[in-house]
Every structure is written in C-alpha cells, then in structure tokens.
Length: 239
Image 1 (spheres, rainbow, N blue to C red):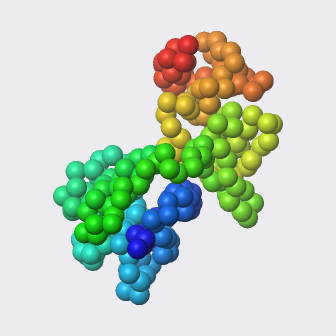
Image 2 (cartoon, one colour; image 1 turned 180 degrees about the vertical axis):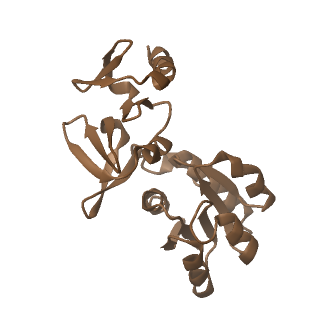
C-alpha cells in the first residue's frame, strides 16, 4: 500500500516542489495540499494520512503549534527555511527536518525513515538510482500560471521592487511577483550569490569580473560593497 501524504505549506512554490517529488515515487500518494494548518485539520478529519510534510512558519497556526494542538497520529516531516527550529522539532518526535530549498536526495532520505518505521515486512527502501533524476528547478508565478525554471538555465535575477526579472541562458526574461530576498533563500548558496541588493548571479555563468562588477550573459552586474567579500570568496572557489 502506498504511503498517503499531505503537504501543508503557505508557499505555492514549496508545494509545487514537494508535489513533484512525491509524483516521482511510486510508493507515495498525495492525498491533498493545504496552505495552512486549519485546512489541514479539516483534511485529517476526513482522510487517512500516513505522512505530513509540514511547514513551520505559516499564518493562523505554525506547524509546531499545530502538532501540539492536534498531536497527529500521522508521521511528520517538518519543512522550513529556518534552522533555529531544529531542536524544538525533534522534541516533538518528528521523523525528519528538511531545510529549504529541499534537494530530492535529501527528500528520499527523510521518506526512507518513514519506510523503516513501517511494520509491514514488505516495506522496501526507496533507491534514488531507480528513479529518473531531473535537474533542480523552481516554479515562478508568471502572469496567471506557474512556470518551471531549471536552475542551470538561470544567468541572473534582478529585483524590480515587488517583482523579479529572471534572465535565462537562452535570452528569455520571466517577470514574477516575488521578492528577491525570498528567492535568495530558495537558491543553493554554492551556485548563486547575491552580488548587489538588486541582483543574484549564477556563479557558474560568470564569464568575467573585476573589483566592481561581474559579467554574466553579456551583462555587467554591479558588485555591492556589502556583498563584495562573499562574491569574491565564491568566485575564487570556482577558479
């Protein structure tokens, strides 16, 4: 029998990522997705759920408050962008604690902890080499739809106040209602660097640089004074 899953997260992009991961594993079945704990409570009253992917920072009720109030019988994997909740989460006997952005192999490690706890003798660990791998990606809301963007294709991201412009290697420009600070937290820090308050740059796409600017995709990106040391550190590691 598949492990029935429920995703509870107020971030549409985070839900899209987890949903895509669950879809790639035959032994997992997605029951529903919820944007807050109140919705999740209603689903749990009606549906059998074996595994909760539960965000911590949510409106109305946090993931931790939700667990304390409900004491769910389902297994729980916390998903969050904040490391400081790790200790408290383990005190609640959660299965695992996934730090966003969540890598697929780390997701599988967490799910396998649930598999190991299953009483069924037929339960088998999920092998990542038996699952077709895809390149890391994120979804951006462009106009009225969610658009998949592979991280390897991004050259740089520019802040437009409440929006961002994402420039890709093939010359496309995607404008999304999103704060650049939000994307900075979601992107892997070893591949992307905040070069300026208005720019995030793909380290692998840098073609030239000086003490004041980075050249990427034929565009010169200024280096902000407060970001310079981190930029130079990453560039030197790539060299």
